[in-house]
Length: 419
Image (cartoon, rainbow, N blue to C red; front, side, top):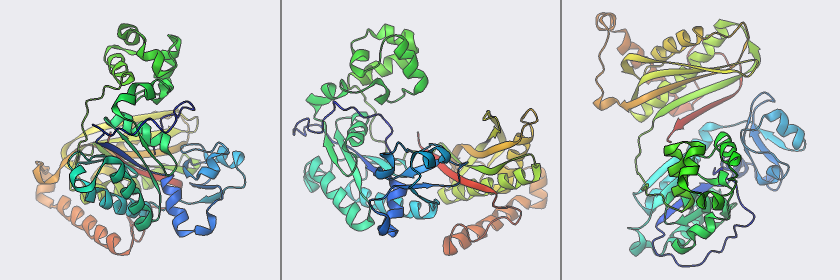
């Protein structure tokens, strides 16, 4: 979902001139929660939270739950305190993937110029579809109606001249709405927003700007670019100043290559046991390998994340001698990396595995080691894992897995980095 803060001053009606407004941002409303409500209609109108136990985080919350202050990425323990009457549902990632595919199939029927940036949102360039399908607002309205009728969930659509403004517009259209920001209204719209709405402004950058007295987009736009650069750096300062004036030349990029694939898990109890941690790493590596093979990709780098009981987060990475999509190879490197982490004697709260520096398997040079060439172990391992893939495709993602993995986590999250 869009995470840029809204502004109470930013109303939804900025005019009707659609000239040049060919960029749409489609964003599902409370996506994971909406998919759950689709199959549990009796929960509609009630606060619903998707997540695991109290040691995990909120993956999604209905708008009824958000009214109590619950939001995604919030610790579940806090969410339960804020909204004790909420219905808590465990996540079903397979259902979310299936719903996402259904939505994106509809989106691709509108135009081939689609840039999917997450499981529940995408940019469209409809400049070439206007003669066939009508004005951007007509296209957006029909798309929203089809998603609701065929997939059973709602989405919000922002329409503007640039990706950046279209994304902000969809945020302000939520839930289940549509918002057009005409070219002439771009700067007035932006001037109503807090500076945190700009792409690239996180908590740290927001604080740096606040130290210079810049808390709104209007204040940033009215500040000399040299002063903004002094606050946040030369490149970032120039970029943010351009955004404040609505300048964003980045086009919609269909088929943009994925940069990394990863998964992580939070344990029910902080762990010292290296065998159990290693088992969890194997399960995460298995998920990464399966995703790589499904996408026809291989990884040249494996990285890990370790969070200790004091919430200190440590990362390590290693570039491989040859790229791979084999889970056992990813697991071997991941385990060695985790063992190299100085935990200061503390137990582990969370571990993650990520495959990085991705490239297409079809064009990659897969050079086996001498041992692999003699023993043919790599090919055997990959063939075995492909068999697992076929079983999962037929019977479900949780139907089979590595024998040594055990389900010790409260929440496992898989993600693809498209940024």
